[in-house]
Length: 367
Image (cartoon, rainbow, N blue to C red; front, side, top):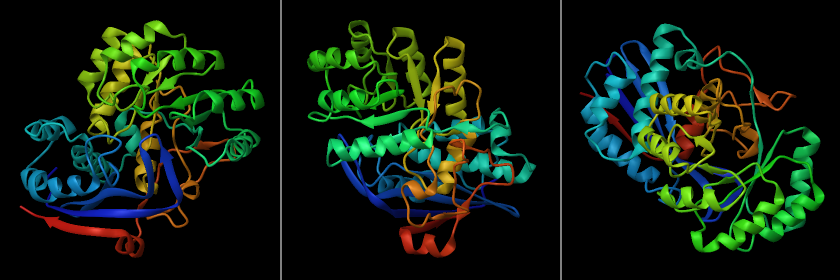
């Protein structure tokens, strides 16, 4: 496969309401969409590092720049037989997994088009429905949160994820558990705590959570291993898992009992599959996370979620959860079983009019 042309778009997709976490809020989701042309075949990728380096160290503007001016010229016009070939070409550049993912995912979506094979089959997944959980950010009040959780329970979602931060943790969980004593719940701290907050985590132990997601620093493994020895609630790593090597080290030192896999955060789909396999071999369950992508990026996450060790309900969302009008079409919809079906007839594609309306900047790279 040869990339004959890359058309890169930095987009800002307006949310229905701002998404609030421990590191702030986003009113728009900034992502990079790349159109890949190889001969007569065209396919798209999406990677969503957000507007500012608040989730991790990348931003959509930075990813756009690096693809348009550095990585794009480095990869176009060259032949790649496998994704590993492409990743070896990308290995020259340090870090920047979201940027690399925007390029590497394009190899897979092109391969799917060229071979007439669904993406999940290329990845080694099963043609099966995948289970989605319900997620809630930091709300304006406990009452609003409880009402939204009740809606998720009434709809039959199998688990609920709650964003947590200082002042929105122990009291919030006390209220949630009082209202929903048997509900499967976990919290996501988005790196907002330190080991100095051990007393808080010990209080959280009382709420019988499935796990605590990324409680400590975004780049930490050792402190998470230490925390895991001192509390009863399992730990799940998210931000800290940016590579296959990171997950290998985390498993070696006991830093996580669950792993969240986001294809953008780990540098693409080949790394995502490798992380899945390492965790499967270690007996550690995984689940798939999202970055509030358009229907295209969300569909790629659904395809990845068909892998057999994805046993905890994933962060997979219908388009209507976050967007009045999705950038990509057709929009993604849940089944009445709160599942997503894999994509056997091709992935969603950006709608030209929506793409034009949401584009912040664009560029083209040819050999």
